[in-house]
Image 1 (tube, helix red, strand yellow):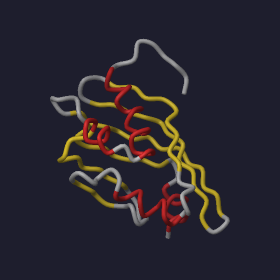
Image 2 (cartoon, rainbow, N blue to C red):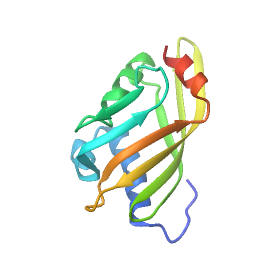
Image 3 (cartoon, rainbow, N blue to C red):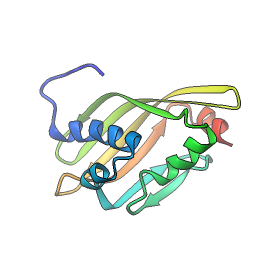
Image 4 (cartoon, rainbow, N blue to C red):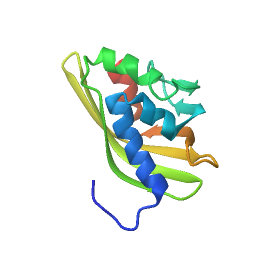
Length: 135
């Protein structure tokens, strides 16, 4: 990721959230995300829908990780934020049954009064390719 200055603390929280989820750091996940977190994922893949509660961020991706034998990756490229909203561009990649998918996503995050993430919306650049990889 390219460094840009100054970085809002919520942009740093977004980037930290990617590391916490990728490493399964439950303590850090709890610090970054509200227990009432809601994640909205478009499309028809097994991760599609609105997920809520403490497992909202990890549950949809455990299934995708299993389908791809652990090749699923989300690499943040750039994040920007203010006190209420943040956005990240990330590169999603995975290999399943010999097919490799690489697609950019924009994810919109909403922060609560305590600066924890309370809601997120995912937007893949190519939803058809994303759905096709997992169905």
